[in-house]
Length: 264
Image (cartoon, rainbow, N blue to C red; front, side, top):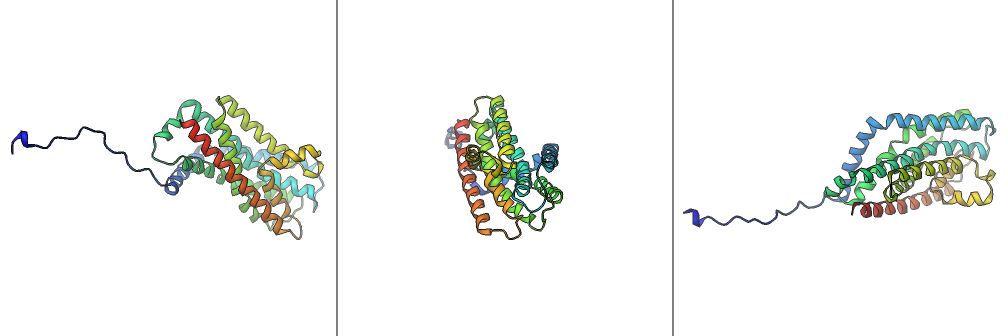
């Protein structure tokens, strides 16, 4: 065979590798973000927990301990506030920084679905808050003389509340035109979770109660607060968790759309 008989080499572009499926890509993003959080987010988790415990100490001076709705709301709201600080505030800052520094271009070049990036990151930030929320709830129950036998319910509250707040935080960070505005939006969201989630709903003016109903984490707070009663209404607990999960699905869908819009 001579050189002239050699088949011509193709000069066209090589085909791209197939895109990764949603669940394996989501698991990979989740593991990567969780490993990153263990290194850089532990001091922030300590700050979030310390802040919530400080609010418990402050409210202990104005709310009577014992079996009363105000004490239930303060302890439940302080525990969920840890989730709001990390999942809403820090995630808004994280995606705002990614957009401002061009970090989204890295994710856009990967063959992964946009939903896996948003869901994996949100899940990592939300699950990172579980230890701080449990510590806050345990100290709050001790300070306000509340039963501690149902703290396991918090493990059912954190996933939907964390999903709702993380989706909202990601959307705020991705939709903000500047990084500074993303940081401001995250801070305002956490302040809303503080004022509307920790303070007992019965002591708020009626217009403010309407605003509280719009806050996704308030349903998680109500669900957890109901479990401190001697005989909890588990139907209402499940209803609150269901509403919180539905809002979380909507907020994560919004965050996925915002990610696609920002990546373009």
